[in-house]
Length: 342
Ligand code: NAP
Image 1 (cartoon, rainbow, N blue to C red):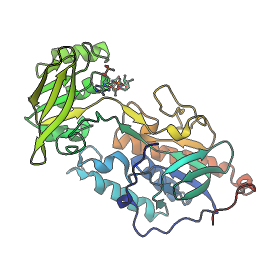
Image 2 (image 1 turned 180 degrees about the vertical axis):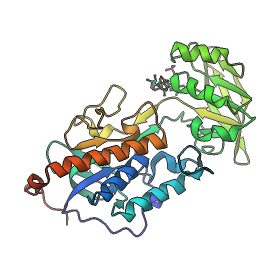
Image 3 (image 1 turned 45 degrees about the vertical axis):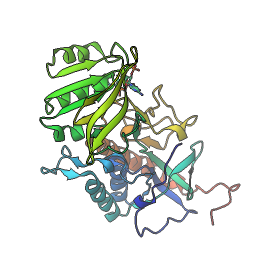
């Protein structure tokens, strides 16, 4: 997996867990799903260990303001929401450690998880590794993320009140978000690389009817332009004629798909054709004792509140499952052939 280590996100002052113990629950990923699973399993006295992944808090930690999480009528900053969730889980005994899991063995219990910082054993595992919005990988995109470039209309649309924005993409997400963004933007231009949408017909019909939306076909973005830390335009190229030009805009919303962070589970858990972990209604994966919550298992809703809800549900399910086999689990040991981590 292509992870970038960001040590600035490491929880400060946390004591390292004992690598030679078998944890009741290890939670992989620390977004709203992971931290909610931690809260619920901690309150059930399971002393969960959360392994953060490369970014404590996940996608929400890079969202400036969250205005649709219940209980915060004045909105809450993404990093503050993460901090509050972390403190709440820790208050009940959750341990949050910075590590990125690179390999798992879910073929037998205790489950074995290997990260940069060591090996962890767990009776139950909750996976909340999330999904990553696909990037265009053009100049200016990273530089202006959070300053006019966004991957979430629901999160950032409100900041483009009475402004002009560009949407990139021709799938269901792009069209759905484009329609949503016209609640705020005065004018919206969708830029699509082909001459027909991938999105379903209903959404296409709604786009055609929306007077605020126009479409530029057969066109790809080349560069996001800006000044004073703010987007001012986007350089475009018509793929049929080769013509290049700059379109002035206040914002660039990119919806070209998400990549679920499921690579380390390939061959061990059932994964659908888009890379999402397959779960049943109780969020059980194809391996008993392993649950999945949040965007790793949800290609549809992808909201902080829905991910948090899934995390809570997975935590409750894990607690019930562990309670049923408490006695037999007392016999679980770290496999002999493996040297305990010193
Ligand atoms: P998607 O269906 O994969 O669409 C991605 C879009 O981005 C496509 O139009 C694609 O162009 C374009 N694209 C990809 N890479 C690009 C690049 N490098 N430069 C420019 N354009 C690029 O992703 P999605 O829209 O996020 O949808 C994901 C899944 O969720 C789909 O199954 C979708 O049906 C579902 N979904 C459903 C709903 C709904 O039913 N209401 C809402 C949202 C999502 P091409 O078309 O040329 O490939």
